[in-house]
Length: 269
Image (cartoon, rainbow, N blue to C red):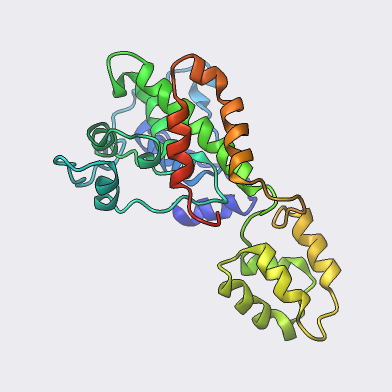
């Protein structure tokens, strides 16, 4: 499954056919967590015959693992107990762990115990069973949806002037780096954790490297390098509050939620 998702992430258009709803739901949950664009098409419905969801299930729709209960832990301590990964600054909200969106440890435990650890997997689960999963009304899910929109806007704003991290495959695809320089440039990439802006500064200082302009043009064209000036935290905070004003007025989230989210972003992201 992971190998297929990686092919799709690289731009391949792939089709997976199944006659079982539980298998389809497993794929949707995994794809939702990955952030890879995807779509479920019910061929039976399109052909106006019985839905494949009516076939007997042979396995649980989601694999439920042993999830530690908060047991009185606060939000920060529970995040450590769950071993929550850092936010991928290059990704979208679908791949963000729900700990960054759910500030109630008990609610977070209930959701994660169902197999939904990221916003994408929760969204897929709610699409299948409905928002009552989070409570008797829809306000809980509306709040999380608003915070996911906030996270999406925050990630987009943080990428302005920073671009996204580069990998060795991109170096090879650029066509600007000869085999003579490839290992040296890749070592610089690893040194800076894939930070494209820092890599370009190092490459500019490499003696006898002749394709600096071509390399920079490739990085800008592919979105790895953003020539704009980065936004400072004050500008990001202001833009985020303006974008979320409708959700704040509707009571789905607050300015305090925005401050909490800003504080959880990794340094240099």
